[in-house]
Image 1: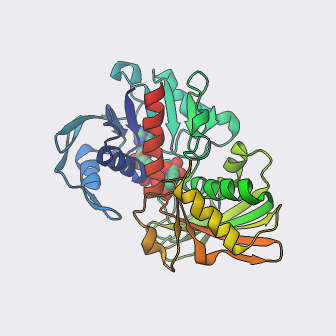
Image 2: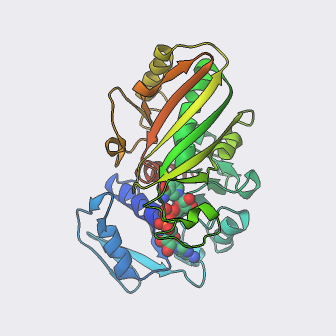
Length: 333
Ligand SMILES: NC(=O)c1ccc[n+]([C@@H]2O[C@H](COP(=O)([O-])OP(=O)(O)OC[C@H]3O[C@@H](n4cnc5c(N)ncnc54)[C@H](O)[C@@H]3O)[C@@H](O)[C@H]2O)c1
């Protein structure tokens, strides 16, 4: 298996590592961030959303120790690590800084062979491929796909829904809204921010926000006519996307829910999609590894308009897919 380096040890980077270690997918050859080792070790050891790691964790100069594993740590506040010297094949960038081609190319210039980005690239020109597990990961081409984007948590949640509805009933067009937990791009208390709506306290407001998910879905299905937005809400993780669609074929709520049940239990979406038969709140899906958890009782139909809703743990579900996709790429390069 090729070597993997983890660059950016924040919310997604730390959950990516938890999934990678606990599922025996990989041990990264290095971790890099701009903070100090003891603080990063402490944040990995005790996580507000996912609890305590089951092994001792410590950080000292140039290394993080997790159980029996000692992983080199590189402070990259001044420069990107020398991936060639470290023997790194695949860099998993969880900093949010590789969403432009220049940002991702910087890793290749330092000797990495491949980059996997934990976010949507700004445009199709900013990456070589957008690959999602259960959707199009099998189109990975090692000769041409050196910069791969995995889209966002919302992209992964919606893509599974779109695939099922497209394949079973066809989609003319649609709109989505996702109700999404706050993240580190927002403010703790009111302060001016680049995106004006992000200026208000995240834990006290419902904050409308743009979502790049529709654009990223169109990278995969160029004829897809869907647009949407996000409402950031005061929960620490856990989100739900509602997708309202005009389908090509007529369908009933029962037929739609049966299609979701089938997709979740067999075929490429098994392990990616799940279905809920009963009525729950977001607490049900925190720490759930699926990317798209269909709330079947919320499926509704009015005339030609179909409404479906998919839960996702925006941190944990996404980090599970990211770790699986990293392992998949590392096995093939
Ligand atoms: N949080 C979510 O729900 C979520 C879900 C899916 C995708 N994402 C995407 O993943 C990316 C990371 O999001 P996050 O929530 O983990 O953010 P975060 O702020 O928690 O983590 C980012 C990390 O990158 C580090 N960093 C910044 N500059 C760096 C540099 N030059 N070198 C190395 N490390 C550096 C920061 O210190 C921090 O630890 C973003 O692009 C985000 O859009 C986030």
